Length: 283
Image (tube, rainbow, N blue to C red; front, side, top):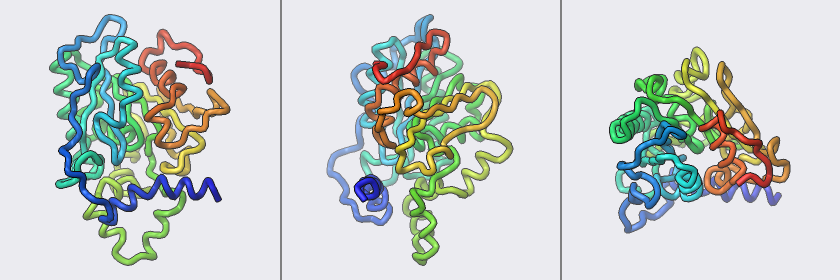
C-alpha cells in the first residue's frame, strides 16, 4: 500500500496539470543560464572534445532537472549546456508538454547553436525521461544523426509508458484522451502506442553511428514497465541501476536529479576509453 501511494503522489503533478488543476506561478520562466554551465565561451578540451547537451524530462526545465548532474560533469571538464523545450503558453517552469515532434525541432536548433559556439561537429546528449527519448526523434526525423556522437538516456520512455496501467483506463472516461491530446500533447505522445512512438520505433530503435546507453531503475513508477526503456540494436548498452548497486532505491525522478551511481555511469558512457567500474560508492 505504501508503494502504491508513493506512486500515486509521483503521478499527481502530471495528472493535475493535464486536468487544469494547477495554478500558474507568477514568476517568469526559469533562466537558461546557470553558473558553471551554459557558458557559450567554453571550448571542449582534448580529453572531452564534444559539448554535452542535457535534455530535461516532462514537467522539468533547463535548470532544475540538472542541479546535480550538470555541476558533476562541469567539474570533470565538460562543456555542458541545457535547454528548455516543449513550453506551453502561460505555463512557466513546467516544460516538455508540447508535441514531441515540435520539441525535437527545438532540440535541433539548440544543438546547432551549441555546435556553432563550441566549434565542434558533434555533441553528446544526456536526457532524462522524455529527454532521453525525444532526442531519438531529433536524430531520426530532424537531421540529428550526423550531429550526435552518443545518447545517454536516464529512465527514458523509449517505447512509451502505461503509467502502471493508468493509461489503459482512458477509454473509460469519455473525452479524456482527446482533452490530453489538445491540452498537453507532450503527455499523449508518450503513451504506449502513440503515433510518434510508432513512427520512431518502426524499422529499428537506433540510427547508425550513434552510441546508445540506457540507464534504468527497477523502481521506476512513471515509465512502466521499466524494461520498455531499453533499446535494441548495435552499439547499445542497457543497464539497470540495481545491477550496479543492489541497495540503490532511486526511482524515476531521483535517477535524473541526484543519483551518483547513475551520474558515474553517465560519465563512463561519455568517455568509455577512461571508464571505471560503477559501484555503490561511485562519486
